[in-house]
Length: 270
Image (cartoon, rainbow, N blue to C red; front, side, top):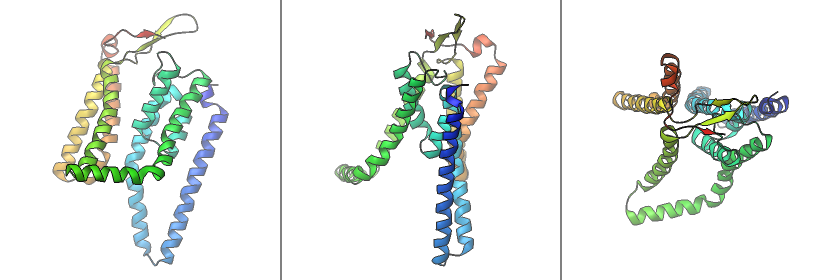
């Protein structure tokens, strides 16, 4: 059995999920009890719970997409554990990609990790990367906010914080765009000595996925803005992600194989 999805990993996953569910139920019960003590109307608490559930649908779709992206390399259980606790697609995929490239030669998210030590290294990198903010923010957030406010007061630009955050996000996304446009694929050697092209490099499908997701996102955002559809603004990103996946699957099925799996740069033998 694949060690990434063996019984031990499954048990660990179930323990984590059970803890998360128990924690959620505990806080829900305590919140309802406290609401009754404060005299809050049951209809108000019910509406609040419904709105909270609806609010979580959008990030949940993005989380599902992240699990799908990480599954080829890490199996389904580790991404399931990780993203049930904390994380998002930009952080998890960036951390996993950096770790995989560091511990494996020519590795990528499209190739399964077959070495247990490499798998453990990737797991620790992903975990520590998402855990550090939980430690740093309580200790440093006040100083960071003071520094940002001081910088804004000097510049006179109240939008400086949004600009810096947008710049950081754009820089991160640019790395994924570069991979889609110019990333080199890999060729692995099978057990019988034959070479297998993994078709994980930049090519027609990667560019089509990138372009379609961008176009769909822009269209949905424009519609939401013109028609003042608030819920569509929240769902635009996950919808565009899944739609782009659908476009890639469709193109892989209808285009000639040589064209669908064409890569811009020769793959590297792993």
